[in-house]
Image (cartoon, rainbow, N blue to C red):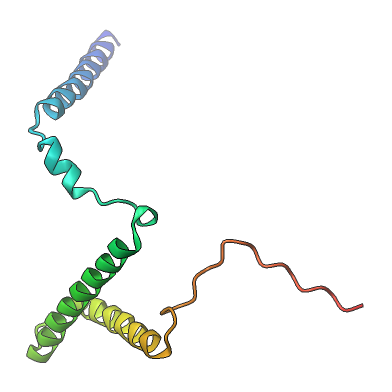
Length: 124
């Protein structure tokens, strides 16, 4: 019985020191300079000006189109894996929605309203 208690205490001591060592390693890990860290953060979409929002939208469209072209080239070469195949399908759907919205002059899909819809009045 004493042997089991001693073994239990020894294991608890090892577990406790492992947590302390992990915290020490985390503190001593190199951190990027504050300027670089701040550069990576982007402002929230609701804090963007209309010009910034348009710029971001244009960048996202260019990025989507470039990835779409890359995936279509891979498909033509026959080197597309399952993950890329699903990504290609999703990006083609996005591009199709954007194309339809542009031709119709409205949003790609309707936005959810923030106010709950009022139920229709029952007929009396």
